[in-house]
Image (cartoon, rainbow, N blue to C red; front, side, top):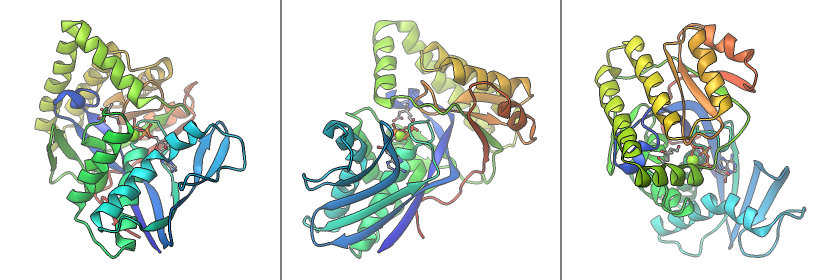
Length: 327
Ligand SMILES: Nc1ncnc2c1ncn2[C@@H]1O[C@H](COP(=O)(O)OP(=O)(O)OP(=O)(O)O)[C@@H](O)[C@H]1O
Ligand SMILES: C[C@@](O)(CCO)CC(=O)[O-]
Ligand SMILES: [Mg+2]
C-alpha cells in the first residue's frame, strides 16, 4: 500500500489565456489531495468520501458492475471517477502492467471544482501512488506530463499543462504552451483565499471564452492582454514588490470579468479584499464560482472576507514548495 499526495494551486496570473498559448503563473498551495493505492487481483475499486454527487457519497468499482448504495445516474458516477480511471490507466502504462488491479482511496482538503486545482492534485497523486505500488518511481516531470494527458482526455481537450505541472513540481511555475518551468527563488507569497461554497464547470467556462474569442476581435485582444499582464507580473515576481503584483492581479481579474468568467459572489469577495487594503485580488481557476485569491500579509482581508455575504470560508494558504510526494 502506498500513499502519495499532491498540492492544489492558485493562479497568480493567466488562467484561461494559458489555454491559447499565453503564459500563466500558477502557484502550489499547502492544501493537498492524498491518494492511497493498493494492488489487488483485478479491476478498480475507488473510495472517494469527499466526492458528493447530488449529495451522495460514492463507492465505485470500475469493472463495470457495482455501484453506490444509492441510485445515482451512471453517467454522473463515470464523470466523477473519470480522473481516477484515467490516472490508473497511465500508471498501468508507465509500469507496463496493463492488467494490474487497484483499490484507490482519495481524501483531500481542497474544495472541489472551486479553482484550486483539486482535479490536477488528484490525478498527480494517483499516478504517483499507483506506479510506486507497482514498484516504479517516475520523475515528477513525467508524472506532470501523464497527468496532463489525463486532464486533457477527461476535460474533452479543454486543458492546459498549468494545473498538472504546478501540482507535480510545487512552488511557483510558469507555463506557456508546452514550455513548463519552475520559477526559482520564490519561497513565500501571502495568499488569502475566499471560497463562496460554489463550483464552476471548467469545460463549459473554457468553451465560453473560446466562443467569445472566435466571435469578437476585442475578446481575442482581451486574452492577449492577459498575456501582457502575466509578462509584466513575472518581471516583478522575484522582487517582493507586492504593490505592483497586486495591481496586476486586479487588472487580470478585470480582464477575466470582461471574458464573462467571474460571478457576483466572486466579485464581492474580490471587492471585500480590496476594500480591506489587500494589495490585489482576483478569481482563480476557471471561475463561475468557487475561489478568489488576494495578496495580503496582514489579517485585514482575512477578517473582512469572514464577514462578506457570499463568502463561505476564508483561509490563508502558504506557497507549497513541495510538489508530489510519497507520504
Ligand atoms: N478529493 C477528491 N475525491 C474525489 N474526486 C475528486 C477529489 N478532488 C477532485 N476530484 C475530482 O475532480 C473534479 C473537480 O475538478 P475540476 O477541474 O472541475 O475542479 P478543480 O480542479 O477543483 O478546479 P480548477 O480546475 O478550476 O482549478 C471532481 O468533480 C472530482 O471528479
Ligand atoms: C481555465 C484554466 O485555464 C484553468 C483551470 O484551473 C483551464 C486550464 O488551463 O486547463
Ligand atoms: Mg481542475
